[in-house]
Image 1 (cartoon, rainbow, N blue to C red):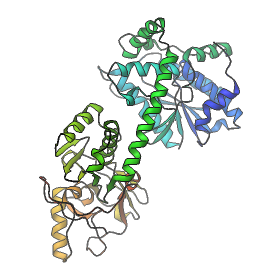
Image 2 (image 1 turned 180 degrees about the vertical axis):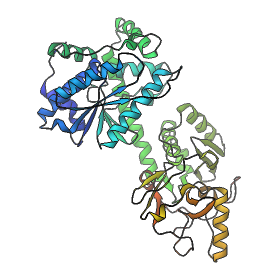
Image 3 (image 1 turned 90 degrees about the vertical axis):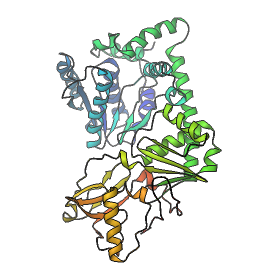
Image 4 (image 1 turned 90 degrees about the horizontal axis):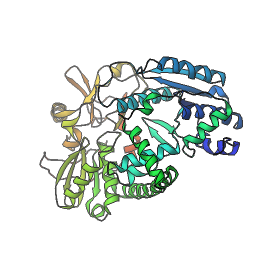
Length: 451
C-alpha cells in the first residue's frame, strides 16, 4: 500500500470543487477527515487557492467526555494549516433510541447551515470503504438499483453542494499516508461498538474479504450500479420534460397512455419525482410505497395519496395535487425584498414593508369561499381549480383574507402588486397552461385562470 499520494491524484480528487468559491471541510479528528484536511491544504497550494477560502468545521455532539478536547485538537491543526476553524455544537436532549441516525441528521443540519451561510460547498471524508459498507447495509434491506448505487462524488443536501473527494481512496491508504507524514488523529470508540449496525457490518466484511469479496470489488459494483441509476434517472427526466405539465397553481398532469407505456423502473422514478415536487417535500416517498402505488395504478385504482400529494387517475391523464388535509406549513412572515420558498412549491417576495404585514398560510376552504364571494361581489369571474387552489399561498391578517396570491388578478379590488407569488424554480420548469379539467370525487374542478 503506497504511503505517498501524488500531486496528480490530489488534483484529480479535488477537481469536483475547483469552481466553488468557498469550502467547508467536515473534520472530526478521525483519520479520514484529518487526511481530507491535509490533502485539501496541498490541493490549495497546487491550485493556487487561498487557504482563507477554506473553513474547517467540527461538530461536537456532546456524547463523550473527550469531544470538547477533540474539537480543540482539530482547531489547532486547522489553524496551523492556515484554515479558519469553527465548532458546531449539537445541543438539546439526545434520543435514547436511534442515536447514531439522529446524530448523523443533526451533524448534517449543522454543517449544511454553516456552508449555506458562507455560500460554500461542503466536503466530507467518505472513502471507498464507505462505498462498500453502504452497499452491504442496503443489500441487507433489500434495496434495488437506487439503494445499491454508489455514493455520488457530488450531490446536493438541503440546498448545499456536497462533495466527497476521497471516494477513490481506501481508509487503509489514507491512514498510512497520515502515519508516514507524522500527522496525528483521534480514534472514536463508538467505531468499535457492536451495538451499531455499521460496526457489525465492518466485522462481517472481514469474513467476506476472506471469501474473496473485497471492499474494492464492492465499491466497483456500487460504481457500476451508479451508472445504471444515472441512466434510469435520465430516462425519467426526459419523460417528465415531454409529458409533465404543471399549472400556476402547482397542479400537475401526465398523459396516461404515455405513462402506462413506461417500464416499471422508469415509471417508479417518474412517480417519485412528481410526488416530491408536488408534495413539496425534499425526500421522495419510500420505494416500497411507490411500488404498491404503481401496482394499484396498473390494476385500475383511481385515487391515491402519498408523500403529501394526491393522485387522481382519470381517463387519459394522471392528475397530481398537493393534499390539502396534509398541509401543516409554519406561517411565513415575509421580509422586504427577500424571496422565500413556501411549502417547497412557491417562491414569494414583497417589495415593501407594508406588504409584509400579515402572514402567509394556505388559502384553504375558508379562504376559497371568501375569494369566490369577493369575486362575485366585484362582478368578476371566480373560476379556478378548487382542489389545486386550496393549497396555494394566501396573505392573511388575523382571520381576514387579504389576498389569494396565486389567484389574484389585476382588476380585482384585493390585488396587491407589491407581493408576488410564483412557482418555485423546480416546478416552473414544467409550467404549462392546462386545459379544463372534469369533476372528481373531491369536488368539481373548473378552469384555472391565467392572469
